[in-house]
Length: 219
Image 1 (cartoon, rainbow, N blue to C red):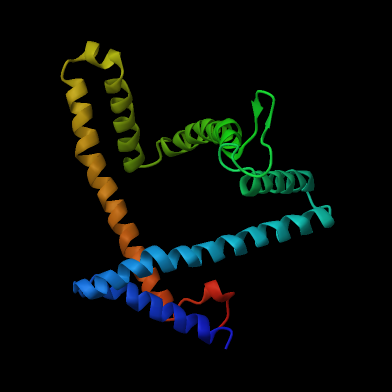
Image 2 (cartoon, rainbow, N blue to C red; image 1 turned 180 degrees about the vertical axis):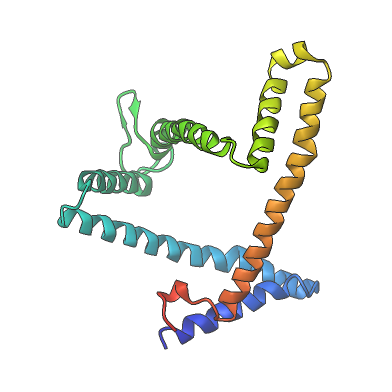
């Protein structure tokens, strides 16, 4: 029953989601709008609660067992607790029941987001540039005809986007733009089409109960 009921509910939800694209009747479209906008919000709220509970449980267990880098888990739980208290009782802009300002120093949830979360996210994406450079180095190594074409195209595009490209030839920037608009877009559409087909196939396997890994494995 622990696996049958989730499979039945998933099948019903999947079929209802597919029917909305087949039946354009206003009555069903209204029902589908309620299903997607209201019911899914309620389910998302429960999913957030489960996710946060899982987060606390996993990192608490890591701290208790003194696993590798458990100090980071302790910092995460402390930041999670402080942020949760400020967000729930301090309000968005210091309008809650708890004070979120000491003199001219505000620490409401919006201030924390703008001064801590955003800079951390910017730092993370800045570090990704080094990983991208490393991946580009491995991808541009000439090992086959395809990698040679990729290297040549990348070199032409980089030169054409620089002011040096216009100095070399006034036709080079236009050629680079053609590469970006035609072969590049065609490749992107092919990738997106493949992803879409993969999503459809995986969704059908899950709805029909063929793929059950999300239940924890097994038959």
